[in-house]
Amino acid sequence: MNFHILTLFPDMVERGLNTSIIGRAVGKGLLNIETINIRDYTLDRHKKVDDYPYGGGAGMVMQAQPIYDAWQAVAQKIGRKPRTVYLTPQGNTFQQEMAKDYAKEEDLVLLCGHYEGIDERVLEEIVTDYVSIGDYVLTGGELPAMVMVDAISRMVPGVLANDESGTTESFEGNLLEYPQYSRPEDWMGKKVPAILLSGDHAKVEAWRREQSIKRTMERRPDLLADADLTAKEKAMVEH
Ligand code: 6GU
Image 1 (cartoon, protein in one colour):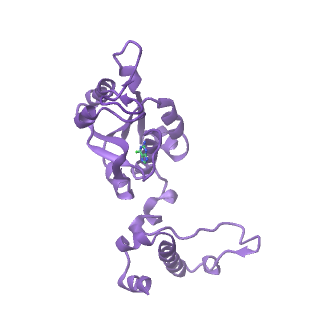
Image 2 (spheres, helix red, strand yellow; image 1 turned 120 degrees about the vertical axis):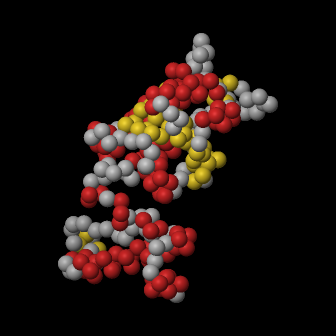
Image 3 (cartoon, helix red, strand yellow; image 1 turned 60 degrees about the vertical axis):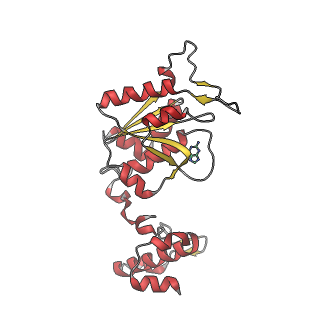
């Protein structure tokens, strides 16, 4: 999968995404992460990419021309109009299901804004999806773009090793993950639950399932409405 990230701060994005599992997947050729510096496309002789908002008001607005030309360079390279996400607090809140859906794309453009926003006319021309990562305001779209690349990439086949697999974890079936333990068996007098040492795989699975449901009830009861529960589990949750 190819990510094309349009940004005024390519070094921030590059440094954030070249480590750990994502860095390994790039090394393996499963992912390509290309940053495009919007400033490289300005036709302004002072390399300016923003200007005052018509109608007045605080801050600066990113101009249409450099963004459109940077996006066109990507479209030309891949030979078609790519799905194009604008990262904005005004977008749809990013969810695990959206990460899975974006992971099916061969190419994805992520447009990072700064200042007070981007000239609406270029957004109308190139943006297919408006995405936010939550209800708070950040100074730019770079961190949200990195969040999206991480969440999408781990859904691309081959990016996670088998033992990192995404099937038994938080948000699968809208349940939170069960608690995990590793050595030692006793840490500061706190014991690992005995069932996990029993070697009885069926009992371990049943315990983990119960813990997932309990944890979701306590921490994210809002998820339970859409959780994949058996009739028996639903009855338990309701009592
Ligand atoms: Cl996508 N951008 C900005 N600037 N702030 C945000 C956001 C995006 N999502 C949440 N806050």
